[in-house]
Length: 208
Ligand SMILES: C[S@@+](CC[C@H](N)C(=O)[O-])C[C@H]1O[C@@H](n2cnc3c(N)ncnc32)[C@H](O)[C@@H]1O
Image 1 (spheres, rainbow, N blue to C red):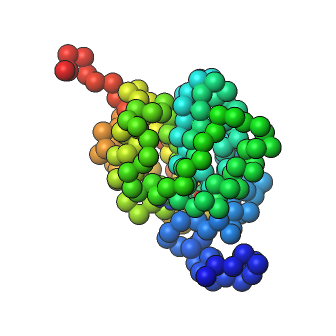
Image 2: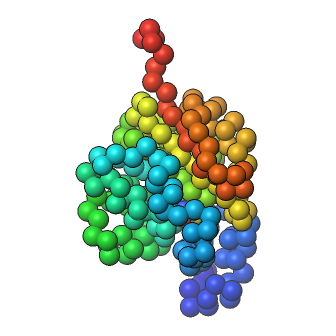
Image 3: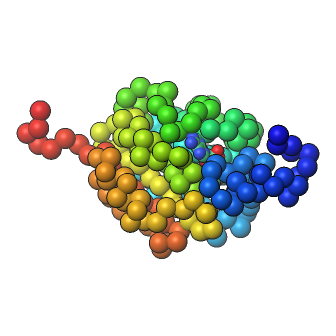
């Protein structure tokens, strides 16, 4: 059984999960909240790469302790931000962070993103995943779900960076995402620290 009181280095299982495959343990959320992360990607930089308007509906899958979430909520004051994570402990930490900013437009859902997601078709304009997709056992079914949940013309943004052991190389990601019907839009940053965006395409003219 995991025990927070032992501290992060006292629990081998927790460390093994952080360094190997599987979801990043909430006991080590201080690592992903590290201010040095700003050297890789700031919340503002991530938000600038997304096609957000004040009324966008955004789904963040695997927000962890909410490193990027407050900035996303701030950018969509008339829209909404839904945070979905498999670990309720992570969502509790994100909630504490967001409550201090008094955002009223944020929802929290504990759920495994490899399963069917509990939202109706075409609910979101933007879906964003930072250092998450490689942790999801069935990334393909997650991407198919995100395709279902995005509105036509909606955008999926995936950020991957070192030193994440589950990081997906850009070409592999592109193949995976395009196989689900998305169209590649743009890549920012070097291959070791990139954001890639993909669109759920509008139907071709003349298609029924
Ligand atoms: C490395 S952390 C990244 C957190 C955050 N995106 C960030 O960059 O600070 C990965 C997060 O994805 C979540 N996650 C992993 N597998 C998941 C799954 N199958 N369904 C939903 N969330 C998952 C983990 O619980 C964890 O919060």
